[in-house]
Length: 234
Image 1 (cartoon, one colour):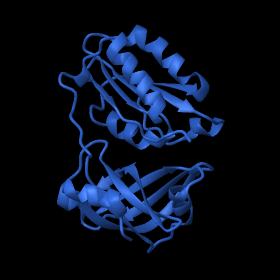
Image 2 (image 1 turned 90 degrees about the vertical axis):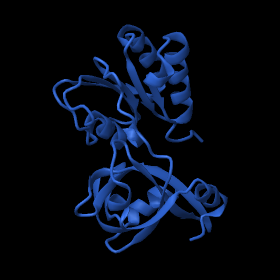
Image 3 (image 1 turned 60 degrees about the vertical axis):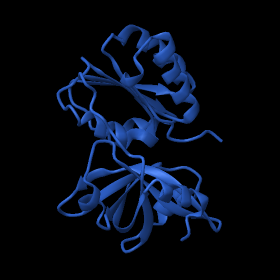
């Protein structure tokens, strides 16, 4: 598959291409699916870091469409990992629903990076939704003993049954989508400290609203806020 103008731009930034092969899949909930892959040499070539993500290329009515996904349980020696799909209408979700062992998909790696907060905060402040759950789990594993408060946006009861990897010192606060921005702002006012670290990954509008609030209203230093819009509301 040709990757169009987006692929050309990524190549200019020295992006690397790989081909992944499906080895299996499992339906976690009605709206959440995990697909297992062999990595096509990715992990040995580039190594692994927390919240590492790849761009998958899907066919969308004859046009290339790319979406980013966080690696789940990458195993460098075995050359395997999984990806988790929050299911909705669209070519990426459709592909994951039909994925069978032996299927292949093209991928590009460019732009993924992570820096461990230095100094470590007394508590991680994490905001996300089903699309960013794999990244949340990966982030929590960076400092396994560090307390964390996680605000997790939900749109259905089943979202509370998603595969969170929480320990006793992790506090999960599920928040309905309609109250997400208001609730997180109110809670952050009480929890942000001078050495806070705030990580936000929701839809683009929510992410911008909360990151702007943390930076401008709560005066969290820019290098202590990591924010990335994972999807756009249409």
